[in-house]
Length: 175
Image (cartoon, rainbow, N blue to C red; front, side, top):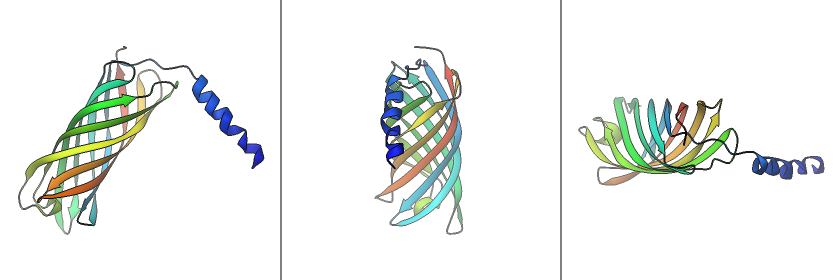
């Protein structure tokens, strides 16, 4: 155990000493998205895909538009849901290949008949908060892993959902 304890300060020093990466002007992301929907303690899973477009205003702050579409079945009913959100993203660009970030977004969710027990399709309020990290493959391409809490409101009740995303990021331009 004592032999590996020296690794902790060495890894921390390496992270601090690593040169900062450049800041792209725009980032376009697309990939797989998973939604763990929850209503009144009953949960079900939806799978889908989505994308986002981020404009970086400087090396730590930007705005992100995100769109996701999900589908699946619940209690024998085929259901779909789409989210449309926008908000600020805060990035930490101090490592050569890794960019952790946090985001808060507001927008809407559109759900089909049968989603969370609704009787007809509807647009409702949605809010997401979470974060993730981009792992750069080179200067122009990265892999993104992201996890978000997604709050929606249907049937005069709040739903607390979990959204997980894995995708490919294309970096455009330079700041």
